[in-house]
Amino acid sequence: MFESRAGLPKGYEDYPFYFWFNTSFVENNRLYLSREELDNPRKSKTWDIYKEDFGVTVSFSDPALM
Image (cartoon, rainbow, N blue to C red):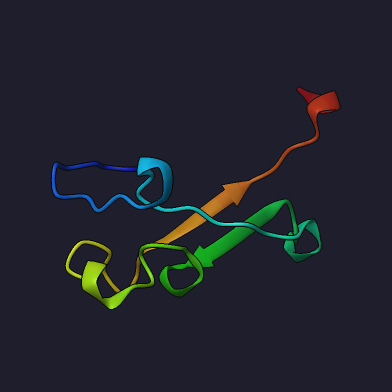
């Protein structure tokens, strides 16, 4: 999960990171975005908080199966 701390940089609308994606990039109901693909963490001034291996995995499911 995501761990937060006071020094976490916040950008647009006070979010630590954000992203846009096209659903055609989703394979096997998962989408992984590396630090370089996320707005805010990709900036070198935030690399003391967002380490090189930082990334986000988004998992999708069929709502009809829930």
